[in-house]
Image (cartoon, rainbow, N blue to C red; front, side, top):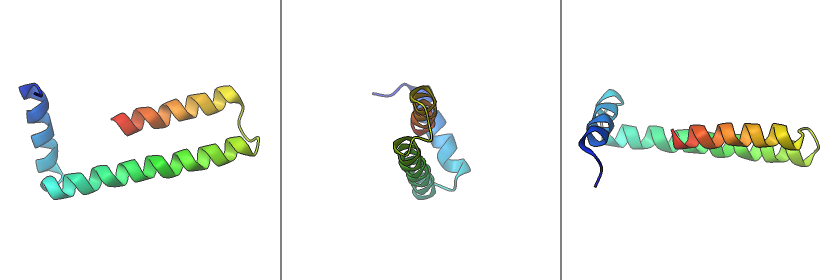
Length: 68
């Protein structure tokens, strides 16, 4: 079970975004943006446009935004 403060925070965000349906749509859009950015990153890496450390750094940033 989620702690009460998490449930309250989720409810507050839902209200800010116009309810549960809008909140779900917003999250879905954010995830899609992360996936698109990740696909572009992989393509750039495959073409040699990024070093391993650069790829790792950008991939970690995308993963962090995805979790947020």
